[in-house]
Image (cartoon, rainbow, N blue to C red; front, side):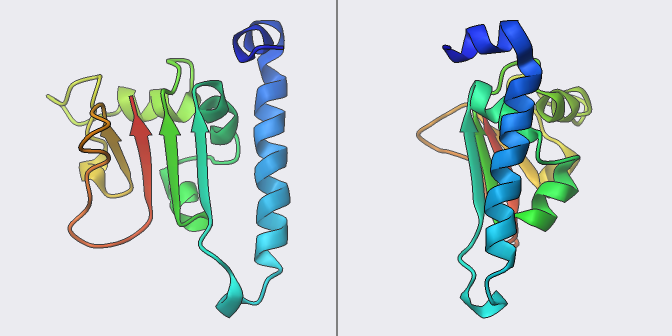
Length: 129
């Protein structure tokens, strides 16, 4: 089914699929010797970002389990995206919120400039809105 129909019919399947995919990849990745593990990135677009979020409880969880996350075009019903948007810093716009000074989660609505970088390197979760 097209993703929008899948969501309308049973959004729990998208969440379960996202969790299962991450668990399978992470399970294989964590068994590799630490010195030989590639960096682990997670991504999803639109409904894929909805399913991809299911693997994480919050921003810190994203940072602890991955090298980075990029969700593009997250629907307004995405749980984590909604939480980050709703708890954004006062004065930051809903379309490009600033969440916890951009420590882990950063947003962009400009595909040319991309996700802003932090002054210090580290794991980032990015949302292209």
